[in-house]
Every structure is written in structure tokens, then in C-alpha cells.
Image (tube, rainbow, N blue to C red; front, side, top):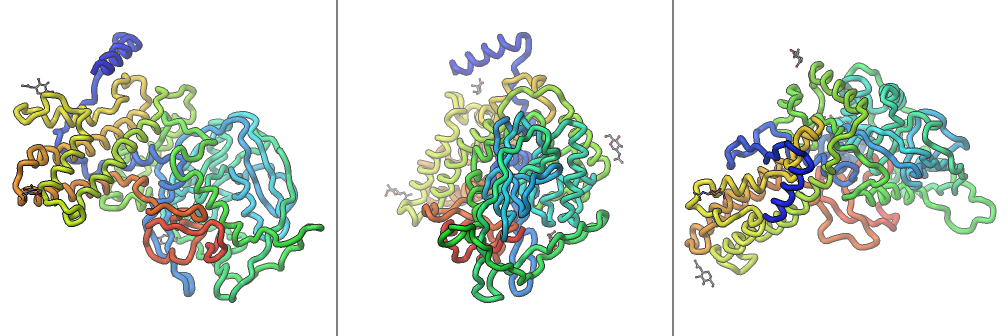
Length: 557
Ligand SMILES: *[C@@H]1O[C@H](CO)[C@@H](O)[C@H](O)[C@H]1NC(C)=O
Ligand SMILES: *[C@@H]1O[C@H](CO)[C@@H](O)[C@H](O)[C@H]1NC(C)=O
Ligand SMILES: *[C@@H]1O[C@H](CO)[C@@H](O)[C@H](O)[C@H]1NC(C)=O
Ligand SMILES: *[C@@H]1O[C@H](CO)[C@@H](O)[C@H](O)[C@H]1NC(C)=O
């Protein structure tokens, strides 16, 4: 309390005259989130930017593709965020191709050598490395935005590129980068950031802010030995897929089957033993991508939260109905009205044209602190609520154990007034618990985009605090309750905790358990690389070998 008073005093001095107001919770303390609330989705997006795992996860079995004898699922992650980002001076970037030379305009660069090396599967391999000579100004599309597949991964880009999302344009990469760079030119943007199994940058002009460090002729990769024609490298990209028609919604082209695997390359003179084996090496971008799975994610870029433009803005009325009852990974921008589209374009122009930055609040840290505070404790709670037999406790004892956990989570928000004889005991717990620290900052310092994030933080906290307090009311005197009442209470709490965790949908709860051995990595299926076992529409992560060739994924790029 003393610290809070000190903080209030400090703020009052700094922002002289401004009234410090706590969040205005005009809703009853026990009101559940509105049916169309996007607070949970926006909160998670803010907490996940530039991290690979959460942006790979939300792609829940959107489609199954039958390809010959093999059927596998794609799980595109649909992003809803377009946000300014910067890449600092002194950052290395890589571009791999099979001919000697340096790209001049409009190309893609990787942040890791392994990702660039992928682009020459056979034969000669030149990797050009660049260094940034100043901060690059970029725009970042979240989700699995480099997945050239239908089902929404390209929606946000296509809104910018063509003014509307059309999944038939998967392969229109050249036109896409041209249009994006033309749009970005107005705002002095150097490029665009996307992610599939790793982050990549679409560079608009290699002569601006980039210097060639080297062009190296790297070892050619050996061609895998095929066990049988049916059983390896089943799918190859169509060579130079033709840009699809630009006006109609149509599925992305299926992968075509190819047995065209070239001869083994000649090793350089003096070389002994095996060359890097292509099949195994094609797996390495996944490994390097996994280094950015979790917070802090990709640290070679920084986002400007104060300019976060989101299609989860509930003012975009045309998207609301299409999200109802649809899991987060399936949210699309299809059906956005011309008016809403124009609204987003205007906001983007305002954000990217802005000279000032926002309040300086690190919203990524704000959301992360909340996830840190509750993720582990909610998981513990769910575990402790498992059926009585697991613990050899009777229901009353188990309920008492759970009561202690509610208390642990809510005690920072309780005072000596937090007893049922005080009519507002529950509402004051929820109000203290769900008021974001940032609401101590005068709203006038926040950009409209920050106010939207603030709203999502508050809405998310409110739902956590509401559920905990509802359960607390029930648990308050449970220690003296009958076995029958305890059984009923435990069942109610199980439902509350499940519903809360489902609503939050935090990716931190999805991980390999037990953890993988040092020679393995935790894996979620994702385009363009698939493995045996990806057939099921199942996003349970699993450990796969990161050293053995056996069962390596079929790579398709
Ligand atoms: C997902 O995309 C694929 C390929 O374009 C398409 O065949 C499928 O119908 C789509 N599924 C959904 C649910 O949109
Ligand atoms: C588009 O939005 C503007 C401003 O909100 C509104 O005045 C107008 O009626 C809307 N038009 C349509 C077709 O919804
Ligand atoms: C009830 O609790 C609130 C919040 O702690 C406090 O402000 C209020 O004075 C209490 N009311 C009574 C009647 O004790
Ligand atoms: C639950 O178990 C404890 C310890 O064995 C016992 O003291 C208590 O009476 C039991 N409660 C009920 C309701 O059976």
C-alpha cells in the first residue's frame, strides 16, 4: 500500500494536474465477457509477437489435403496484426540462391544462414550475407504469414496488397512484394516481416540500408538416396508456379509430385567424406526457427506497440459475426466490408505516417507479466482439481487444498474488508485484481492503438479475476463443509478452470511434456515441412529427432 501511495504521488507530480483514475469497470463484477469480445485474442497476439511457437500453434486443422496416397493436414495460423517494427543497425541477413550474384530489388532474406541455405537444395549454392547499415523500418504481419497456402495466413498482407483477402493468391509472391513495397514507399518502409518456420524479411531495396558482407560459394548438398520411389521426397513444388488469377477465390495449387531429383553434386576438390545431406539440412531452418519459439522470440527486431493495428478491433463490425463460435486459429478476414477495409487502411496510413511514438509502455512486458502470474498457477489449479482418487484425499480435504490456491492468487487484492459481511467484498476484489497497472497512466498519453491493447488487458484480467472470485465465494467456508457440498464445488471449479483456460488459450500451456531430450526438438506440424504422423488433425506437440535422418520431414517450399 505504501508503495502504491508512493507511486500515485510520483505520478501526480509527474503529470501535474491530471487525475489518476483507476479502470472504469462499468460492468458488474461477475459479468462474463461479451460473446463477441476479442480481448483474449488481442491480448494473446500482443503477448506473442515475434515468437514462433504461438504463431505456429493457432492453425487448428483448418484443412485436410488429399495428396495421392498421403493425406496430411495444414494448419495455417491466421494473423490479425500489422505493426511497425525496426531492425537495428549491425544485423546480419542472408539470401541463398543457385547463381552467383547479388539481388538488387525486391527479394526475400533470412535471418539465419540455415534458412538461406535451404534455397539451394541441389547443385551450387551461393549465400549472400548483408549487414544493416542503419535501422530498417519494417512492417510485421503476425501469424504464420509466410505460409503460401489458403486458409487465411496471407489475409492481412492481401488486405494491404489488394484491398481484400483472397486465398487464391498464394503464389502471387512477386506481385505481392511489388504491391507491398509500393505501399510502403509512401511511408519510407524498407521491407516487411513474415514468419513460417522462421522469420524472414521482404526487402524492397537492397541499396537502402544494407551492405553486402560477402557472397560465398557454399558446399553443395548431397541428394538423398531414395529408399523407394514412393517413399521419399514425395512432394516437390511445381516449378515456377504461375501467378494465379487475381480476382477470384480459388484454392492454392496442390503440391505436384515429382521424381525429378538431380544427380549427386561433385564435391569440391580435396573434399573427403559425405557432403551436407540435403534432406537432413532442409530440417535445420526448423531447428533455428525453434530458437525463437518463446519469449523473447526474435530479438533482431523490435515492434512498436503504440502502432499495433489489429483486425480484432471490434469496431470492424463486418468481421464480428464471422468469428462467432469459430476457434481462434480459424478466424479470417474474408467478408470484411469495404467500409471496414477503408477504416483499416486509413488507420495504417495514420500509424505508419506518424512521426511521434506512443506512451513508451512496453505492452509485451505488460501482457507477459500477467501470463507469468497466472499461467503456472492455473495449471497447478487444474491439476489439483483432478479426481479425488489421484490424491488419496476426501473431497473436503481436496477442496481445502484448492481453496488455498484461490487464496494465493487473490490475496494481493484482499483487505480486511474482504469478508461477506461487506456487501462489496467481491466487487472490490475483482476491481483491484483486474485494474491494469497501466491504467495509472493518463489515457491522453496513449495512442488509440495502445488504448485498444489496454482494453484487452483489462478484459482479460477481468475474466481471470471474475472466475477466481466466483470460485472463492464458493470456497470461502468450504473447509467446514460436508463431503457432498465439497464434491459439487470441486465439479463446478473444474468447469470454471477449464472454461477459463480455454478462453485464454495461452500457447504457454502447449508444450512437450515430458521435455525433449537434447537430441530432439519439440515440434508442431507446419507448412512447408511435414513428417509422418502429421496426418492427424492433432496439434499435440511431440519430440522429434534433430540429429537423425530417419523420418525427416518432406520439405516443400
Ligand atoms: C484451406 O485451404 C485449402 C487449400 O487452398 C482448401 O482446399 C481448403 O478448402 C481450405 N479450408 C478451409 C476450411 O478454408
Ligand atoms: C461507413 O462508415 C461511415 C463512418 O463510420 C458511415 O457514416 C457510413 O454510413 C458507413 N457506410 C456503410 C455502407 O456502412
Ligand atoms: C467494504 O469494503 C470496501 C473495500 O475494501 C471498503 O471501501 C468499504 O468501506 C467497506 N464497507 C464497509 C461497510 O465496511
Ligand atoms: C476427510 O478426511 C479427513 C482425514 O482423514 C477426516 O478427518 C475428515 O473427517 C474427512 N471428511 C469427511 C467429510 O469425511
